[in-house]
Length: 210
Ligand code: AP5
Image (tube, rainbow, N blue to C red; front, side, top):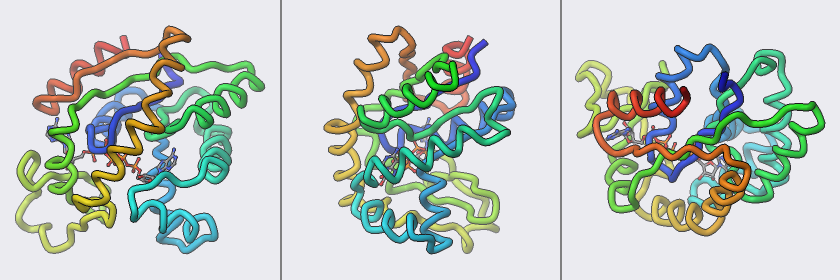
């Protein structure tokens, strides 16, 4: 069974939306380095203070910071039977560090799911995103409209501007895309079309996970 999973894809592809759905079925922790970094920023930790500047500009947080954070997290007790990493690895160096750490524990990844969405659709998905800070639920003003009674409390991420979005997309193609051949060489990459109704995407993901 597929239990140690990396969920990859461009910014705004729907990784967070789909991970929330899949995790209910899989009973493994959803580990999003973006969520962890946003929590660190909010808490004002040294790592958070360092990360904030990069994140707001749509740049990647330095490998050394993110690698330590992600590797520590997958070594926690709740991740012993498996995990779904979301947004990590995001560089070839991160992929190599993850592989080395897992090898040391005699483990390996079962699958890397690549959720594919064209750049042309990404900007609209990202600029229309709103999040409910109370529940963490992700909405979209057009594609997944929030109920009227919670509109007041919804927040927009500081990196969801058109400008930061363009930077994130270019970083994705430049720094993150090289992990695709890395995992293809290991025969664990599975491509899933992320365009269409979210329920259809979920069904495709479940099929891809076997
Ligand atoms: P992170 O939080 O990982 O952001 P991301 O990869 O840019 O991904 P997003 O959260 O933007 O998108 P998503 O794919 O989860 O899409 P969502 O489901 O919300 O990282 C943020 C920052 O942290 C990075 O820029 C970097 O600075 C730093 N960072 C994190 N990890 C790092 C690492 N490993 N190394 C270095 N730096 C790191 O969906 C988007 C919108 O589309 C929503 O509004 C949703 O409602 C809508 N939507 C979802 N599905 C559909 C659909 N099927 N049809 C229409 N709309 C849809």
